[in-house]
Image (cartoon, rainbow, N blue to C red; front, side, top):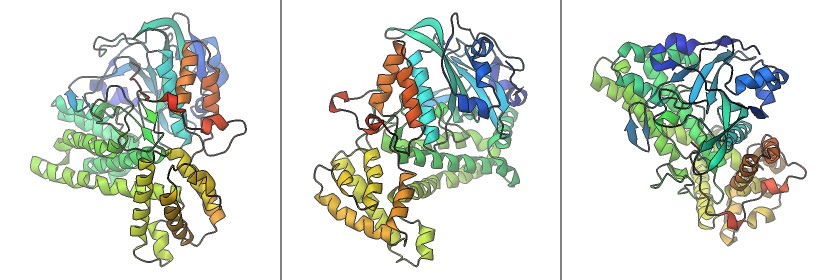
Length: 499
């Protein structure tokens, strides 16, 4: 099995990793393979399914050209700083350039203890690795930047958590695994040259436009801020809760990474928390933009030595960018939300010479909708999808979601008036809304059902759920149960890190 590896991270940043080998698997069995992703990477799915391919995906054989390393980083975990974290149970195998010329990391998770394991066994269980596969595919299909799983392999051994569970290894694909926490670690060493090399590497790999600036490191910070503002707005638009937004889980590329105690909200409520370890609600659904800004402030602190020779000047420059995060986020969020509601954006409104108060009316409209949804515990995904039907003239499905629909009746009249102000046929608007409001998300009860079955040896429910969520915007025959909210007996729901 041949991989066309390149290893720019190792060449550029030897001080941020240590060579290491995966532990291997005693009796590997391929559980899932992402054929489409394999083809993107220029790999042959049939070869990956063969004995040599499975041996690589199981960590039993390191392919030719790979330079397997465990990466080191620091991080704030629930606000508490840990000066040395790193890949305790993961390895970067190397980088491949895909068929579109994009550089992509191949990374193994659950591949055994590394020097950064901090007492852990370095292994992973089938359920959490399949969760990462499922949610990554869902997010990709929903248009949210994300890491993705190439494969999950059962290792043939067991891991001890609260119970004895079947072990697994995940092979993950990412634009890179550069994290805010990696900049924190580099800064903590006091090695300015290492920090500079890391920033230069990040610019070349993810934000090359920064090279055109006379202050490239400030431009790097600005680009990462905008990428994260866009990412979090997309999370919010589909009801995604990451659950553990530590600085070591925030990428420089702007991709979602590390699907641990993540979930999708059902009934809309900004205070929603599912993670069993988030006792104070730090990473609640409605807090995600604020936490992203906090994390970016930690990136800015790490970059200060590169932003100006005078620390005070560096702080002032970084502060201006960080204070602009909210406006950037609001713009991304507003653009996405107006598409979900079928309401024209500011530029189109201006071109149509709509009243200058139009934007304020839209803001009031959205505030009222979310207020009603929260008060009456309305399912967010079902509500927005049903609004497409309402735009076609059938208000009954969305109206039925509200226990007290009188306030919705008033709201819907105002909404339809603002939609009509855009000058487009309502049927056309409804079609556009359907392209951004999913029918299917990885509903938490369906994910748990599929993972429980897989842990017991039946992978079919994972395969079926994955198939459905890969086409989230199209109604699929025979898939009604995948579009329904969880039954009342499913709650309260808790997620776990899955380490």
